[in-house]
Image (cartoon, rainbow, N blue to C red; front, side, top):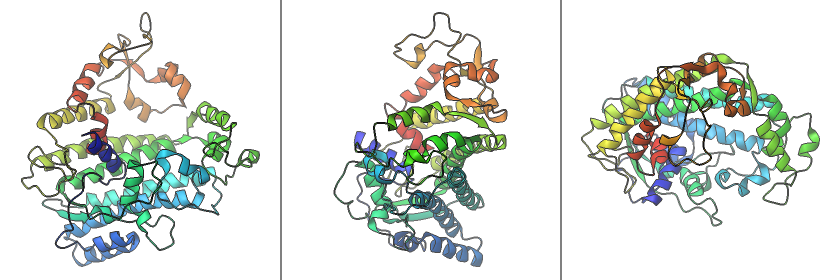
Length: 433
């Protein structure tokens, strides 16, 4: 179970799956598969658009287009990493950033505006994918894909190698310290269906919401002072910082400790584009609605065909992963609770103003003392955003504009939800969306 769960986390992070993989190729691949296998995602999207132009009711073609557009968003993010040489020579030393993106020996100079552009490009591409999927009539749609053979072209050289495959990405994340080459791509197959349409739309909204939150704030000063930790060629007034180059300890110098302290110290952002926080809230609320639609469709299924997320009567294509009825029931409780928090109907408990303070060691979330009356209205954080000062938020006074009296979500509720998933709650959280 532990091994399967680690594979699952890797899968969800990149919308792919790892595990005991024994499935073979489908009897007949959908038209989009050859483009995904060759790493020609742009060509694949164009080909699916032609099929849709010929037959607007071809739901498999529309699903294929949406999936390809989502993959293009991931590839685009990877290309931006390559273009600006994210982490440069330091990247191989950082466990979870050893993605199979080739090293760029001549990275372009990155500025604050270009860094924001990376996130905006991601949002734009995800929006395109979500809008395509939203036009579907997903009843009984099926899209069998050999997921392990999907490839990217991260460096834009027109060649998608095995090292740039989803399979290599998965292997890298599962075995971050490996030195040998990734194994050959695998024929592992998943049949995506109606519930997965809503699931993928939910992921588009979730990632877009996170990006919009970052873009809502001004982090220019932090970028100027610390971007050299991440990029080798930075447009900054503090050019002497980048002149040091990578250090001898995993690519870092002793003085980089001061840079990391500065990175944390500079988490004090003015909200300069509050409308983005409004959009982020809409994205997160859409995730809840789509999650309910996804589970309604999944629970109505009667087949058992290489399922991505199974109902209790099905098996997951990831061997050993079972979804019980108690899990699904508790997951709906989770959706209800998050929705109530996002709508301001329930408050998040506040940890200051507690007589005697909070003990140093707490055994369970049930035992965390909180203010007897005040709670945090999370909705106001989105609808009336204020400066985000990490230190003041942790201390509590930075949250003062969002404090009010009202019904608060209870720690017991979250513990009961988590208990239904054993010690794998966060893995299922990423998987279920």
